Amino acid sequence: MSDSQSIDFEAYRKFEQKGWSEVASGYSSYHAAITAQAADALLDAVSVGPGMDILDVACGPGAIAAAAAARGAKAIGVDFAESMIAEAKRRYPDIEFKADDAESLSFDDSTFDAVVCNFAMLHIAEPDKAIAEAFRVLRPGGRYAFTTWQTPDKVQYLSVVTGAVMAHGNLDVDVPAAPPPFRFSDPEEAKRTLTSCGFAAVTTGEVTCYAKNTVDELIESLYSGTVRSKAIAEAQTPRRVRKFMQLLRRTRSHSPRMAS
Image 1: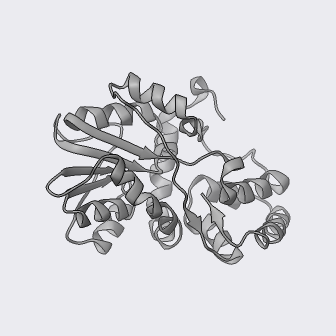
Image 2: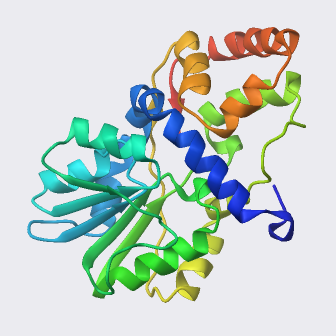
């Protein structure tokens, strides 16, 4: 966890944008199947229905926007990675997707009935700005919802990976300092931030997602479908990588399903 005073937000923003632009296909092949499992709960939280104007922020390959459109809503998806937008357009050609910045949206005030953001908060340099932007583009009475990861001790998938990294990885690598990745895992912090940005009647809840993968798929996903984890993995010596993979295989063999 990094002190916000020591974070170069612009460096972190560029690092994330460049990274996600390079792994759009890999993310879509693995992680998107996990995060998309939260679609119904996320859309239920903002009461998505026919005729509503919905904005999916940091849309990735477009699954949430597509789920909203399937409910009869008019959905638009935005992402700061052009390759993610291209992937979303390829998958869902009938839905509008465009490149945009979560922290400075290009839409006018009071444009949408609901705004959603699925598992992207830890990839946004200054999430308070993104939440404030969501509030700005909402119509009076509009609703906003986001999902975020629980802490590794509560997420088997994360605990397996972080445990192996901590045991055999060198974390002193040349990547920008990051904002606290699990800041919004704390319901009270999420409520405080949302309230400070203008939202009222804030509620929180939990959604369970499952990663049904083989060990090889899990390892491949780290290299081809993540950004910070990929950078850390690629900075390791071959010996550290072998040790990491051995521990990951031993641990994973006892976890047929990983709850997120």
